[in-house]
Image 1: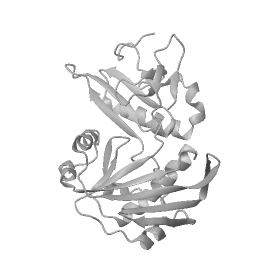
Image 2: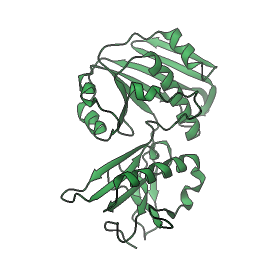
Image 3: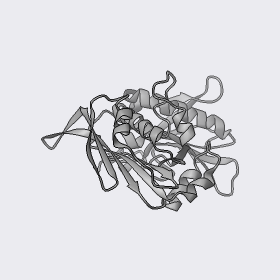
Length: 288
């Protein structure tokens, strides 16, 4: 595992890398699904022609993407996606934590009634460019969700749950397709004993090898901060080469500039984030 080392004048030192070598989500459902191998393969092949089933046994189906061959320790192997049916309830504490940061889903209590999880996991994919990796994972996941009825998708890594209906609205064949649905989340935390003080951060960019953002602020509208974090989260995903050059961003008011620097995240998971200072009137404990 990599470690971050920053100058002695900074706060970032010996912080674990939050990169996810294996990317996984779980589909939550009340009953064990019937998964038809050939139908599922045809659905995936709408997006990736050269795919084949390499294994189907013991509640596990493996797919190999033959146009994505990577070398590991002098051995060439295709990127894979594995679907695993697990007949047990989701871990309730993790689920409730994610539901607490899932602001767009209404019927949250239905997820606690689920008795079956279907894990969708990529394997041998860490050598892909991060954008290519996420595109492959998301389009394959969409193909799976189309054919497997579920209550919703639990994105464990980004601590959010998205309903099946909402996820399927984001069709990869549409012009307005959003590859980061579920992959990027903005979280909100209210500071105890201070109703006007918050920490907001993104979760998901560090998992794919980029850098999340955070802002610790007071007396500002969390909705406006959320818009800023989402906007710059998408910008970083699309322009990773400029990440190290960002030292200011546009603030809320006209012509305002907010300073940025790399810090250790205030909220778990431990990782380095690009910390946004909203200025003297709105910041909480920032140093110059």
